[in-house]
Image 1 (cartoon, rainbow, N blue to C red):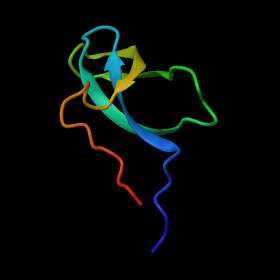
Image 2: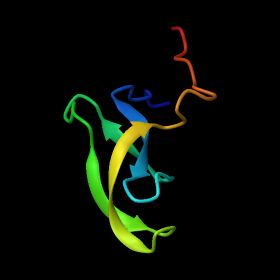
Image 3: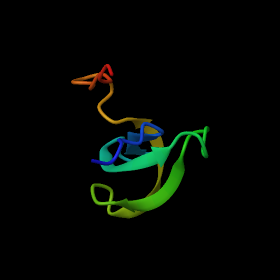
Length: 68
């Protein structure tokens, strides 16, 4: 089995217009240490908006790393 790459973290993208997390993506934290900002379509506002990076689930049900 292949190793799980721990450098990639799952993040949520929050819209600047509606403040909803519509998109989720993986980000390589070693190559891009700052906050990720993307322009994507916001289906709630029905416009394109800037999406900024947040935690995937904002602290709820966060998965802990396995030992070993």
